[in-house]
Picture 1: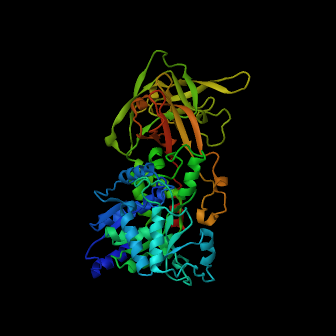
Picture 2: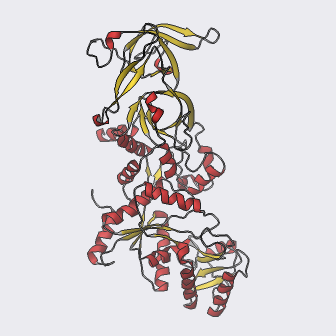
Picture 3: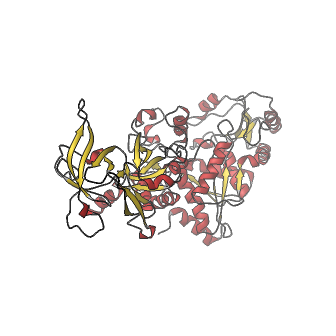
Length: 560
């Protein structure tokens, strides 16, 4: 695979000896929510580059905003990174590890005349900032003396002033064409208990200040960020140059946008807090924990991240590619089993009432090494409601009055009678006969029928719950950026994103363990839910259907 543009930069740095042959990256999430599939791309990129070049990758929590952060998120992030298959060894850090050092560096900036305490309100700072076409105005507090700034900053730390009354700002250029360079805020007063430092600090550094300094302290060589930080890079470089400390290199790549998917942590938090989903790990959520609970594998997600590659400009990826990756991964891994999601009873009237026969079924035709299993067959079975039709359309090759169909791994049956509810006309049972000479694999029957359907023995079936998931978002290709901040994303939520069915599964699933994955024949890939499953009622989440629209899309593009 050809090198991407980030690898080209690293290759050149290695060639010139810029970092003495070192490659050191970091993954720096803010612990204010659960990670999603977009973060998985960043995890795979940062840890993957370290692995490729024999370097190091740190896990660092940028915990500079205690009002939104929690240890729950810290724990979930660690679990997600490990589950994806990566290790930070002994290099787990927090921006809060450096709070004292960050403060001392801020004092250094004040002493060198590069930072000042400003009394403007947040609203006034925005007004003074200017626009893309008009320069900003200097704060009336910009030219305070060093001693006064040092005194005020120390008193900010001591808690003498109310929240929002003063900030520390960098003194750069209020006429800069880059708005981020117009005296950005470095520190704000915030009385909020921190998940690690408690109430020790009353002032907290801004991300744009803490981020480059933390990278520098850790000796990071290549600080890889998403594209929205491109305009922040001059500030990143300014902070390191102004302090005269080790300089890392910030490189921006395109974030992941995925069709039918919310990729904003703020919106995802809203869905959880307002009850639109059950939790951060709801299987409809694009969070890594949600994908894990739904049944996605780390191999499929890493494969997806490899396939989409690393680009310099934003684009939207079809979610069908992610679905294709999990199908491809599970094709040779998942056992094929029979499950009837919407059951209709079939009575085989010429099969002995007291007889139970064991039929042999292969576990995975794509992987013979997975062996086979025995399935009980009896007089009464369940089939899918959709596999019987009294008035079939053309090319309907399933069960019809007087018609024949093969039962997978079993016999050919023929519909002889339909039993209905006298009041509603609903079909209650279908009575059939079977041909004993047509047993699958017996080699005694030359008869063939066009249709084959799956089934479970009524006496042996395990009652279960199946959860069928659809996309959480109705619109296919609209990202948060395109929708705009004023767009009510909740109006685009899919009201039919979950259907719950009481169903029957074959008895081999009695010993299924939470997290185990199967292909339910003709229905898709399913995973036993790790939260809601019980010994009495196992719950199976549909990971993905069997229909692969991505393969068809690629084939159509190839032909054209």
